[in-house]
Length: 76
Image: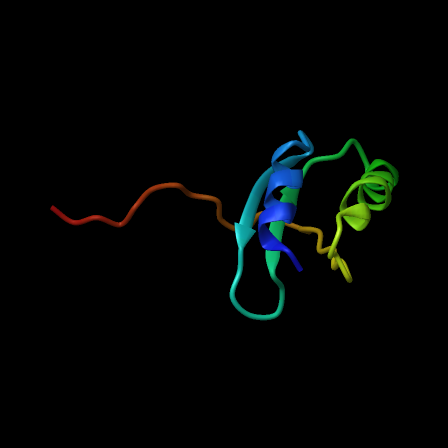
């Protein structure tokens, strides 16, 4: 996959809120917003699956927010 091409394309997709280059199982992790699952599937098929070099996609959905914090554990 051409990582630079992928990053250029996803930067222009307003549905993609965050994009991370990963180490491990997948190349990129995206946080995407969509109205519902039907809209997400359409976005995935119309945009993500059409990016040159994309061979497969894996979707995971959160079931419950257990903890969401932006506080940093910095001691003084």
